[in-house]
Length: 223
Length: 244
Image (cartoon, rainbow over all chains, first blue to last red; front, side, top):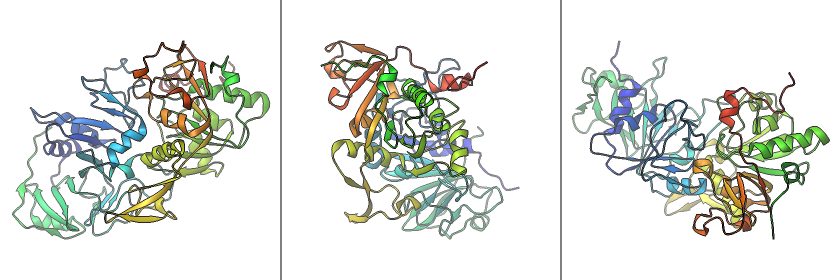
């Protein structure tokens, strides 16, 4: 069986690229874990769509204040320096280029940076939330994703098959096997798990990986 | 001048069949549960209002608040960004049965359309949803070499709002992240009705602390200890309450 990173480990790796003082939006689900792995000495300021900058971790059970929640409708806490604002200001921060990083989940990513992460097709009730806004405006738009689907099919493709969230928006992919940048409409391999050959990685990727320099080892602690 | 309304029934008495009603809140935070329930009471007593178009970020949770309004059969169309929740069964069943129309709008576009409606801006351009299924039929224009989509303002006949403190002139403060869509919706409706925890004398709210100035508010009604959606849902509450 191919070794691969857990979602927690992918979140750890993504956290290593966040600079001190960066303004960061973390998507609902796995990306939320990035907040737990800020390197010592660095402090990011987290933004949530429903109008908070600089919120803290979840409160203890029973201590929830339901006027103090994140975009996933989970209770959070205040920290020194927290700010509240209304939804139009919140999305001005998003679209206006004020966020440094947005880290999201993905169903599919294409080599041209197209992202599909909001709909798996016409069945059921469609729901988009803030995903289509978040992919525009942040200086870096990164995704955390398994490299392949549960059936072993590539999620990194030449073109997305599922409905798009945004066009040409993704700049970096933290997958369960590799760190890949999107540059000039192509996938550029930066890091890969040491146990995996380039050929093996390419066979699980739906578009060509450019390798302008030897990829670094993707090493993540056991967490 | 005094915008104080005597009770919840009076507060929602003007909402007519077929109107568009903005309802504040993001999930349960900032949701005017008591105003919504007063509207449901009126419907059960009179059969009106019905065929409402409701604008809210979500589609209700459980069987109280917005979900109860939909469950009562009063809503024909919902304009929202995320019609899912922990317990979205009321909306989901009606949507899949073709009994309620959905206009899905990205969250930031929804906020800006409402803001534009309140600010007298009929349309604006945004990068959001360009190249996606939600962009179909919308004009595209290039600015500084990038494509942007034209979106139009969103206005309403009524807005039902939850604030924290209010004075008799309609000046409002909000509690933490319960602000969300509420200040925008106050601006975008012909008639804005606000439930507040306390109605105070003018001058009691520091002018520096006012978030929504009273010019955007037509009526305030006091609800001293407002219910929270999450708390009601944890108790499996329904509205109206089912008789024992």
